[in-house]
Image 1 (cartoon, rainbow over the protein chains, first blue to last red):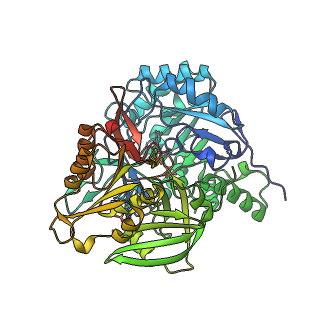
Image 2 (image 1 turned 135 degrees about the vertical axis):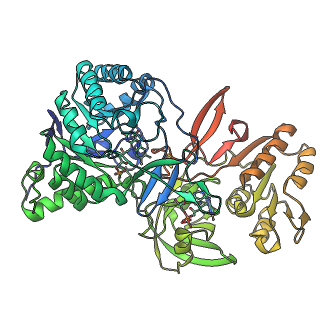
Image 3 (image 1 turned 90 degrees about the horizontal axis):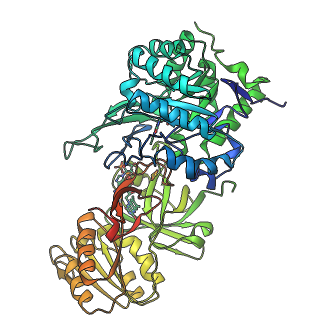
Length: 304
Length: 253
Ligand SMILES: Cc1cc2nc3c(=O)[nH]c(=O)nc-3n(C[C@H](O)[C@H](O)[C@H](O)COP(=O)(O)OP(=O)(O)OC[C@H]3O[C@@H](n4cnc5c(N)ncnc54)[C@H](O)[C@@H]3O)c2cc1C
Ligand SMILES: Cc1cc2nc3c(=O)[nH]c(=O)nc-3n(C[C@H](O)[C@H](O)[C@H](O)COP(=O)(O)O)c2cc1C
Ligand code: FES
């Protein structure tokens, strides 16, 4: 049986529902040594800021049971350098390019959206959920009013669809999702990492120099499925679901919960080809269960 | 471009010391391109979400060898390997030493001696090695260095083997001869810093192999950052991709 894996998401056509999660895939150069990026539905960039950022001091990583904490802190070359040296490389592949942006002020978010949409990215993911920076980041993602304000300004200044990347570190995901929808977001993505901490009991020091960091990987998967399902119930926007996906089965679960696209992040660290095996696993499921088009899976969980 | 084979078979595993093992894989694809200073990223069982980085301590013909110490769950899993076990290895990764030709000094501290053996062997008998250990009971690979190098000096903190003191002692003396074109080093950070200072004072190029906890191991996630400087400006480099070997003058200690 031939299956149709194409997805039209916020008006943009993706050849398959698998995109790489921001910050886990650089600008695609490194993993392009393992497979062609044209195999992917889309590639999402590391979080971009107006000026270059060095990020947080090391150590920036601590392994956890089936997951990891990171405190990178948005290290990136800055938006102009990205447009000059990285974007042309990414555009060389037949895949959708999603630019992930993070501002310290609402004006910076708007400026980034304007610049990047003019530079030829397919979509902008507005990161209001980075737990690792002092100014900006999660600060904008935890209240409905600030999500609304960032959405309004980025929507106004962007020529391409914008997707708000929501923080799981909130009491009610429906509230922030509705705030994004209310101001005209074209899509939402979730989830970013969960704020966490580890301590070395011998030295009594945190394992991360930033003390806290964001939890990702298989450990967070059930939380991500739950949040996508809740967001799906709250808004009509298409959802890019991510958080702990490492197999095709995980991805199908995320689609059933309400996602239209799925993101693969931490799983690539242990298996460089993880995103492709997720893609192939979705197709295998579709063939086995007679699903003609991948979009038929979105939100099809049958709730008790 | 398509994903190359990544599963390799253990051909030999043997203890060097209590808790320290040498494991060899039948891995011609990895061995053929491996350079001294590079590392491999090994999946140590299914229950660990991330791979573990290990310096390559030898690569020749079809074989690739790694020497490791049991530290936690991952290395414990690796230590339980037996010949025939299939292990998922990504590599060789990172940038190794820029050159191992000419009269070079090799400095290895503790377990950091292991990857330096590969450099010593590639130097084809022209290297002089200085190896520092805590004590005789933790000294490793001294015979192998003996046969690979022109000369070797061993130091221990307690004097139970070789000279008493740190590797800096013989290294300082050797540098005074003015004979060596480079110092290549791997070991604890404090040792690397001391080696770098000695070399810089003697005006000899020094390259050091750094360690940092890793996620992807291929340069994509930026968790393995170390602070470096180039042309006066500070930057964050990736130990896995820009390193693990760095010019000592670029490292911000
Ligand atoms: C470039 C490089 C080369 C290395 N070469 C060698 C070698 O040749 N022989 C050897 O014995 N060890 C080497 N190490 C250290 C080795 O990677 C760790 O001892 C190992 O990862 C510990 O894993 P574990 O599961 O046993 O320990 P755990 O403590 O359970 O590991 C928990 C997490 O911390 C990470 N981690 C723990 N210690 C280190 C460390 N020292 N450096 C980096 N990450 C660490 C692990 O990878 C894992 O993600 C090297 C490290 C790096 C970065
Ligand atoms: C090392 C690392 C860096 C990340 N950097 C970013 C970032 O720059 N911007 C962002 O929106 N999310 C970032 N994330 C979050 C991921 O995009 C993703 O939302 C999260 O990791 C959950 O997915 P996963 O479990 O599949 O990794 C990062 C995650 C990791 C592990
Ligand atoms: S471990 Fe991912 S960039 Fe180095």
